[in-house]
Amino acid sequence: MAPAAKRTNPSALEPATGRPISTMHNSFKNKTRPIVVLLAFAAAAGFFLVNLVNPNSGATAEANMQFAHVQDRFAGQHPQAVGVTATYQPVSNTRDSYSVAAPTPTPTPTPTPTQTETSAPAATTQAAAPVQQEVAAAPTPDPGSAQAYAKTLLASMGLGDDEYNCLVLLWNRESGWNVHASNASGAYGIPQALPGSKMSTAGPDWQNNYETQIKWGMGYIQGRYSTPCGAWGHSQSTGWY
Image (cartoon, rainbow, N blue to C red; front, side, top):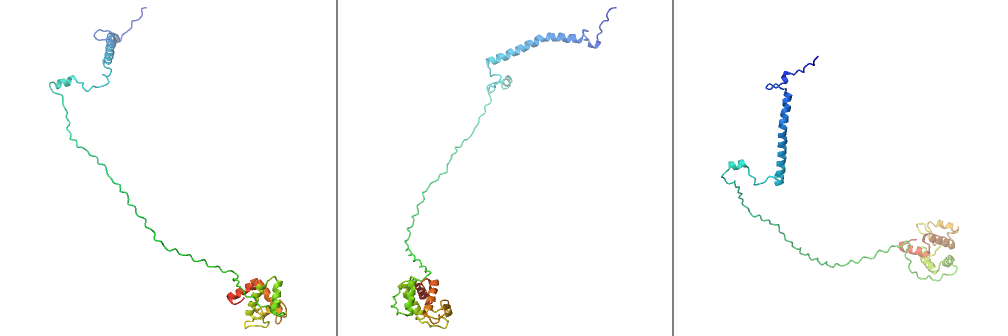
C-alpha cells in the first residue's frame, strides 16, 4: 500500500504562484541579506572616514557652518548683521574719607594743698585702779598709839613706809584715827565700817579697841583695793573707799 500524500492547506499558498508562503519568505530573505550587509559595511566605512578626516566633526558644531537650504533661501543677501549700541557712563567709586583728630590733653589740675589735720591724741584709758599720787611722808607715830600699831602691822605684811603714808592720809580723812568716830549713816570706828558691827569678825571688842578695828580695816582694804595706796587713790577720785 502506497503512503498517503501530504496535504497542503490551501490558505497557506501564494495566490500568484501557488507556492507555500513560507517558501516565499525564505526566498526573500536570501535575496535581501547581501544588500543589508553591504549597507552596514558602507555605513561603518563612512563613519570611519569622517572621524579620520575630522575627529570632532561629529561631536562639535561649528559656528561658520552653513546649510544648503539656508543658502538657497537667502541667496544674494548679505548675512544678517547685529549691532549693539550702548552708552557707557563712567562709574566713580568714592570712598568715605575720615580724619583723625588727636584729643587735646586735659591738664591735670594741681591739687590745692590742704592743711593736714593733726590727729588728737588717743584718750588715755583710765586704769581700773586710780593712778597713785605721790604721798608725803607721815610723821613718826607716837609709841603705843594706833598709828604706831598700824605701821608695825603693815611691816609684818611686807608693806613699806609708802603704804603706811597712804594709810595715814586715808584714815585721817575718814575718822582722824578716833576709835569712837561715827556718822549719821551708821559708819563707826577708825576705818568707818558700815555698819560698825562688821568689825566684830575681828574681835568682840571692836567698839573700843583700835587694834581690832585696824585689823578689820586692813582686811577690808586688801580684799577690795589690795593696798592702802590703792584705797587712797580711789578715795581721792570718788570721796569714799
